[in-house]
Image (cartoon, one colour):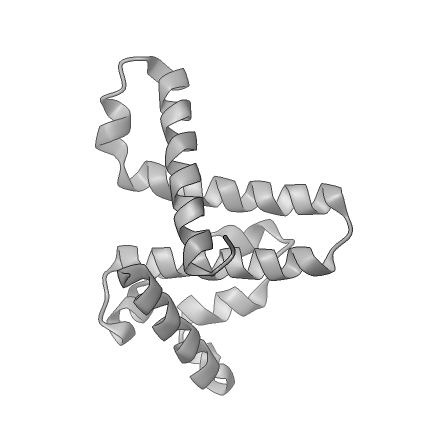
Length: 142
């Protein structure tokens, strides 16, 4: 529920600040690169701090909003694209972005894996699937 509320507030903010978007680096970079660019899937320039401050939410909640927003953009873009190789590349870029985020926020759990790198990869894949499914539900894509 929290993610859904934050995401809706984020979208409203984007719409209301369309003309003054240059003032917030968190928002400007979202429109600077196309979805097909690797740069689109980087973290916000200031780590989401200015947006977190504006919306009175945590940095992690800001990251989640960006992840959901980017998934919505990817899904919208996919409907207009016929290039399967490019669709696959964009989906890979999105998946890597999410896994990087999960890895940075769940380092202790990954470090506790006794099965080494293979178990860590499997755990990251499981977390990605759960996160991706959650985001798709929030966007009504399921």
